[in-house]
Image 1: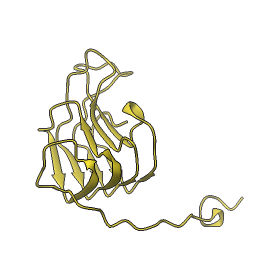
Image 2 (image 1 turned 60 degrees about the horizontal axis):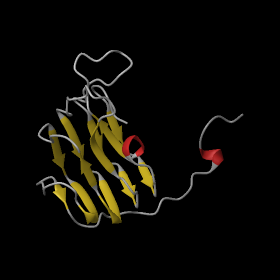
Image 3 (image 1 turned 90 degrees about the vertical axis):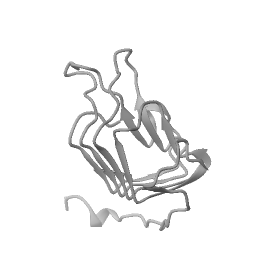
Image 4 (image 1 turned 180 degrees about the horizontal axis):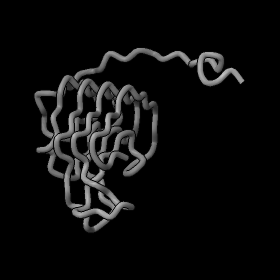
Amino acid sequence: RIIGEGHVIRGNYFYRLTGDDARSGITVMMGIPNSPANRYFQVQRVTIENNTLVDCEHSILIGLSDDENASLPPIKTVFRGNQVSCAMHTVIEARCDLAGLDWTDNRFAGKSLGIEPNVGIETMSPQLRKLEPISRSSVGTTW
């Protein structure tokens, strides 16, 4: 889930996730006006880039609200260079105004796009490459 300001979500690989709503591949929450610290601040100045989502049931959800007071859609938020391939599912589920989003160089292919076509979204199969597992010796501490 993405909430708040100034985050960068970059370089993630999501494969065959089955979650929905708050457990979608990428979920952008609605903000609460004058939010208390334990709730949801409006998403703003966020960059979501170079992520790959493959065969996820719910790849991207924008505007999730689990609070009746959540009314602030994301603003100044950029989706750049992301790739989604989900032949059996809709790519994006939007539950709010998308005017505060900027789409640049994204490649999405799915059962349907889920939103109106946008100049920053190519509806074509992304160029995916198979990832090889990382060996235990390549990561972490030596102990």
